[in-house]
Image 1 (cartoon, rainbow, N blue to C red):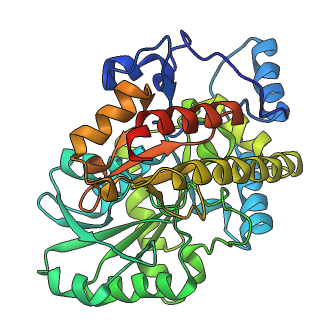
Image 2: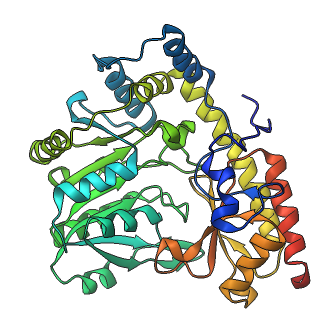
Length: 389
């Protein structure tokens, strides 16, 4: 795979490139799209071949017999994450934002509190609020430039109305790979307050060298309250397929979720099922290994460029392809540093406050793009903040 290839996505109904001017005011003709979390890379050839085979067949009827699809998921989780799952534990949703919404809808009631460790992926709060539930923000603390959770402080925040905690693992936007001790802390916190745990592990394959992701299922004693969510969408750049997996081992939780899926008449897109089956394979694994090596190079280049600009600081990226950059030490108001990035550098990025408490002085940059574009972004940022140097 040639990750250096520039693929023109403009005019392809691509939200990342075609909507940046409408949303951020960054001109499409000269802007760099570094916001929404998809990659500017084609997926492995094996996935494209699977889709092409269905196109060549030419009949797009109802999908039946998903045993190969489930087996592929089992194979991947066992071989890449040391996690054994049963095929009947797998539910397919229309991506993991939908999966999150389904969990909120199924396992909580209106006005219930749902805990988020913020700053965190903005779609969580959106679906919580849209479902008439309350967002309970437990702000993380920074220790030696990385996020950590303060469970003593969080215990003091709880008022007994909370019913669920949503964990982002690895963390978006901070890029943390949570340790076993930290995951055990989340589990103990959930037990103390009788919370369902929804562990969104969509970035679990995108872990930088030197770090190892631990699935939440590795923590004992929480099976009766744990819901796992995984997807090929971030790993293989298949977000448009809108397919994700909600994996539930506990039979009571599983029965409730199955009943809600049935009530809403939900079933997956056949093309997504074919893509997942092709992706979770030895060929897919080799492609991901190459991808990680490339993203690590992008990370090093981008971090070096950010470090060279006084007042800017990127959080160490342990996982994901989303760089979380602080502008606090510039002394600038949020409007000023955002204006420089969007108007002067012409880069579309995600605004920190959308991720909740703790995000005010930050912007999120997507570095899953050809390295020449990462270099271009670094050069533009250096010019936009040139007066600080």
